[in-house]
Length: 270
DNA sequence: AATTGGGACAACCGCCTAGTT
DNA sequence: CAACTAGGCGGTTGTCCCAAT
Image (tube, rainbow, N blue to C red; front, side, top):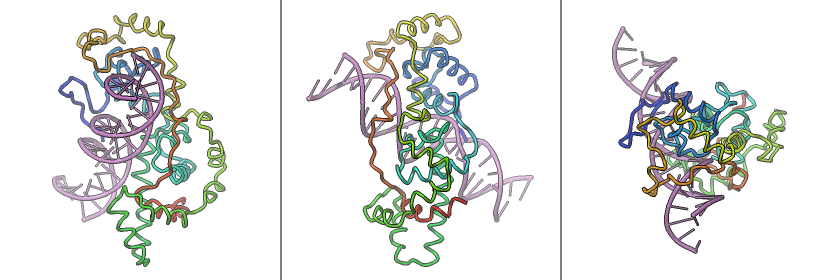
């Protein structure tokens, strides 16, 4: 299920995370916050790239991440929000406490989309010759989003109320449209949790830890030794409290012929 | 019992955007 | 204003698990 650990040519570890790595990352972030993802692995003593650390923290290690089966409310909400937002997984995740965009994305691709295709197939095989061309198009070009598909979606997709009215939970969540009203998206969570210590404190903490378990290993590159390369080792102590999730307006779009799926969505709620 | 094919999901990759210089 | 950097997002891949054959 996970990729076997290996080291790339630059010495960066890839693949599945070990318990030890998880512990190091968790301990470091809980102590210092993630003041700079790219430099964090150096100080945490992890041979990973910053992106990998960020992903691991956001999706698995940070407190409050919910694992396991989805509730009926969550399933319905995912469907509903995907209908509204398209593949904006981070926005969808923002409405699902404890769920991450990656997890929702996986869930969608494995569970819901599959269901939708089944319904689509049943409908195709039962009759509806006029839809055949469109459906073949949908399956052959999964990421197309033609105007014709959108128009079909607009005219035939079920009302939001089908779901909303069936679930007080959904109503409550969806009616609360303010991005700042919840703190569940990856972006928002990092904004709130990661408020780093004051710069000087963070700096002192990091260097005070050089001799501890949290210090970089002797093999790791100390950032200020490598400034001449002109790469990302620049200003390390930046605030990380920008909230980008609320700034991006999105254009609702649908892929994979999902508009047809939405036609049958009410029947998927069982 | 062995094989196989699909499901599930953790992780990676590449691109985009916002902020900074 | 252009170039650069970091963070974030969405798409895709790799691999384990398990049911079907």
